[in-house]
Length: 261
Length: 254
Image (cartoon, rainbow over all chains, first blue to last red; front, side, top):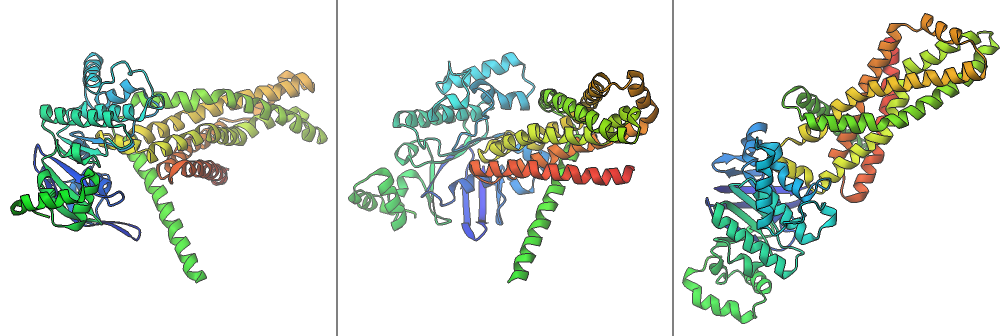
């Protein structure tokens, strides 16, 4: 379970998070949506312990991430997978070695078992045959899939996806989201996914949160966001889903009793 | 207004110096506590040590040959050309060997360390290492730090031996000093203490280069410009600190 309580974060004079509180239950995936530059990645980095809040706290499985000492934090992170927006692959290693890296460094598995696991996960992401290629030799979609394979190879209990489909063509974007869905079904990880592919993402998540100007404007089920009364939420969802303006109104009337926002 | 700017600059310098000091403390702490990434250490010894050997060889040879010419010219004026051997050896062992080797390693390997860590930093590769439950200090900085300490005295030894041979070629084969005189006087005047002083210097330079260069890479700015600026700063700062620390050690060990 991931719980954020009243997070505040500023960079020099720019206040990015202004009291964010969110809760993701065990085995649940939350879609974090909102405009670019509103602090979605900053939230993910707080959950992973890569950034320290000015105020507030983040608990993962009941443990305060910032109360953990070096070794404890490393242990917590070894159960966590993070798919970076850029992929963050090691440029000096090929696809196979990138995916094998966390297993070689963090486990005592024999090389034969590592090879088996890596080839298996590369098969899942559709990258068999590209094992010997270096990050500079593969496309953006392949980089994202390699990064996804690297994040998933340790069977993490918590997964954080930072825009896994940005910059990809619709076919590969859908493949990646379908893959996340099927792996979630198999592993049952707890996750947060930052994405602008709302129509597809809404099919794989159990909860949606919208971040705007440093505060959470909406938290609820994907179908409930359509009924939100908040004009900012309505406008964002309408434009992101490319709905006709009347669509939100129609849904609004139909779903009114359950609406949150 | 000026006073405020001066105050802000002083505070910034103080903060950076403190951060540089803390970086060394953390590096040292992780270097002396297990586990040590032995395979990474070997790789770094190969990169900092073995791959620097050709450039050290060439620099050592030319430095020794120049010392042979200059030393002969100066000593001959005072009728002491027989002391060319000890002059070349002492200049190399106590001063030029450690300092020039360190400057060459800074240019060849130090700049590469800064660029490597800097690029890993801004492309989030260091964050990725942290999120795999690994410590980036143990993985990236400590192997370079230990490899520097191990490799630099050995490179300096190569520099000195090749330099002495360069001086021999010029002094003995070209200018006609006796072979026995060159090496005999050298063994009379060079003591173990001189050699130990040179080793102290090269050991400390071996720690200084990875410390400064890794620090500059770890706290790099953004993008290609940030990396190029950090690399330049790393080479300049390391070189200045090598010369400064050389003066301090020479005064202390004189």
